[in-house]
Image (cartoon, rainbow, N blue to C red):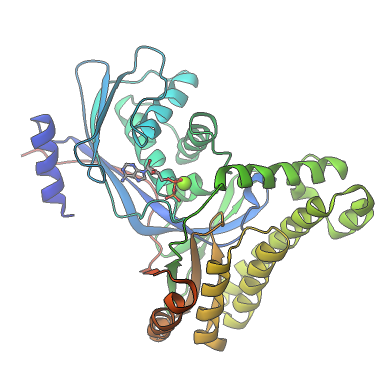
Length: 385
Ligand code: ADP
Ligand code: MG
């Protein structure tokens, strides 16, 4: 949607023009899946798909919010009292952000908000983190809190963990807050240090959403976390970040089969992330393919978060690309999307193969997004006429 149209929508809803805009992107993870909550390594990039929040401070203590994605539905609450969940499912993300800001001791102010986004929802590109970080950017700016991008990301994660009850790690919010154009970010989730890794210009990022309906994601996700925590505790360490293959072999008799497999994934995946960082720097497609294939197989067999539809999409795309591309599932799994790295000339091969084979095999239609790495959170004042 054009900026002009969005601005006029804001004025129509609130009878005054917006003051400023906060923009935070969705993300795709290139490699390093289910490692963040074990304090491991991840290598995501922010996308050019982003969530925009137009806003204008109010004179009272109310937060009023509309979203272009949910026309006719608004949420409204006061920042003075206790903040609890409301009737609007998506409104709860804004309430959750207000809740964690208040809990951290920050004073909030009333504001009118209008959300618009081209991050597809619920397919693993983290529209929820984009929304949390964009709202965090608004609260930080209007209350002049001077928070770092990292702090805003941590507050976004708290909102997801403690208000929305999804025990995700820090990756999604951190990449949305700190992403850099044309770069992936190697994140060390132990200390949140980042290193920007330039994505070679001739490399295309293609995301293929399986459109497989995810089921029981929350409980399965939380079960994986428990397996990882149990495995670490039986190995005598706090988190799997510090585990080695030798420690895993020693602890094998004490571990359940699942605990062993989950830990095996995390240890090998961390090593693959570091190797993939080098491969990306060298634009080494052979190495990227080997590492991304290794990641997918590990997520399928050890971590058990793939489904036939995402395994099938990976097979279809890898066969279409051959040695010219690297493919794996991306995001939390149980459906969602896969990611392919390839040269621009080969994007059509993916499109054709998916069109010809995916529906025939799985009775589902996939959505394909050809992406570039975009910038992280930005908050900008708008020129008033
Ligand atoms: P993902 O983060 O993978 O896209 P989630 O289920 O975690 O999927 O988050 C999707 C939820 O985030 C939506 O159900 C909605 O509540 C909220 N959300 C995302 N984008 C928007 C938007 N543009 N407007 C309102 N709510 C949104
Ligand atoms: Mg999400």
